[in-house]
Length: 204
Image (cartoon, rainbow, N blue to C red; front, side, top):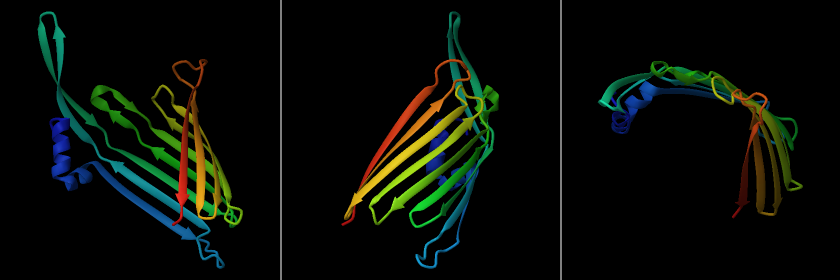
């Protein structure tokens, strides 16, 4: 592969080659502890693995200087890496459930450019209460996302969601707060980011 454009063309013309060379995935899920009265799973466990293969890219870099332009040929190799994640959700009762997630990211390295990030890890835990008879629910969760080799290597996550319903209509509102200290200025201010999501569900 000599350029990004060539990679794009080959991935479109030969997608089987692209996915075989770049990406491999495997996922498993297990349901257990079935509730005899409700007939649904009381415990759900899942795990996934993803392999991203090594990839070579090439190109030309043009530098304009006083005595003329200089063209430098570049060859970059992105090293192969692996990602892994697992999650579990348990129904404590008809209305209450708890969940947990754990993930691990491999290093994203471009050796020829001495660039990269990672490895990294993610963990999260949550609690959900939903009473179908009362028509309302609440969710709360927290976690941390870590990625070494970046200016903000640790990000703390906090989420809250509410749901209310009446007859065949329900409305849900969720907010996620992310904040992180900076390795560049450890004593400086943290950055914050908020995401808001609203959904409307109508049964016809």
